[in-house]
Image (cartoon, rainbow, N blue to C red; front, side, top):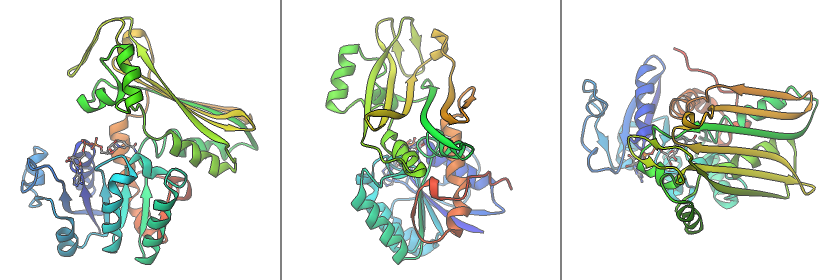
Amino acid sequence: MIRVAVWGFGAMGKGIVENILEKNETLKLIGVLDINRELIGKDVGTILGREEIGITVLSDPERLFNEAFPDVVVLATNSFVENIIGSIKLVLKNHINLITIAEEMAYPFYTHPEDSQIIDSLAKRYGVTVLGTGINPGFILDTLIITLTGTCKKVKKIKARRVNDLSPFGPTVMKTQGVGTTPEEFYKGIEKGEIVGHIGFQQSISMIADAIGWKLEKIEETREPIISTVYRKTKYIEVTPGMVAGCKHIGRGYMNNEVVIELEHPQQIKPELENIETGDYIDIEGEPNINLFIKPEIPGGVGTVAMAVNMIPLVVEHAPGFYSMKDFPIPRCLNQ
Ligand code: NAD
């Protein structure tokens, strides 16, 4: 049995906990951490709307680590290295393996080289393994593409697109994607850094390039408003024609002044109202050419939960250090 603690009991953390509880022949949930006062001290089962499981949400990680000895922590609190580096160091210094779904941790070796080096050194010093994973970054627009290139004698160019529906997401996502703004407000939001679109293009593009030995000159990102021509409404937001229904975010990696990797992630509410089919699309120009599509797209929530949980046994068995999905055994369902 692998003893697992989950740090961050939000939308993803809750899904991860439920998935761990379902895999009770292999995984044992030993603790849950969060800073939300409404959760602390309450039984995890009760919060999930099921019977009590005798584990209450705690706020003090050191106490949990010293009393319950997890083999691995799944960290699902935040997207950015800067905000979670303290949590990561604490986990490693307690000799505990770490999986995180923080987007920037999927491949921070270019964006955060010093922090990456520190994490790798600490992991090796304390004999544990760190992995950044998730659905995207972590799988669709990087690991899956890299895996497909394994069937090519030569790769010239990669183009991929993840078209998804933002309708199920709440106010935070609406804000960071600019949904419900006017086009002018959208561009102002981008300038101020309040509208960010997708987090992970830098990571996915550099992971692909490293995997296939391309030395990129630069990675550029563009964000444009998806302006609705129809009325769209979700539980959280209303968009009238002329307003922004989402963000078309593109990341491009250049080599010899040419775009060799282009990843596109247009995210909007109710895409079907403008006859847009959601899906994951990968086109590799090479020998042979490869075109893959998955329709509809692999759902982000379930996919992220599954990736985080399925990687647990692989992380526990792996050699110490800080790794990305490209250096790990291929993911597979922990189908107990
Ligand atoms: P969420 O906001 O629903 O949950 C985050 C939880 O973490 C909250 O309960 C919050 O109280 C808690 N938290 C925040 N800081 C904490 C701290 N210092 N200590 C303890 N608890 C803390 O977010 P979510 O939807 O569950 O997503 C979690 C993170 O994972 C986000 O940053 C999200 O962008 C990222 N994510 C990545 C992928 C991927 O594919 N890589 C997919 C989904 C989500």
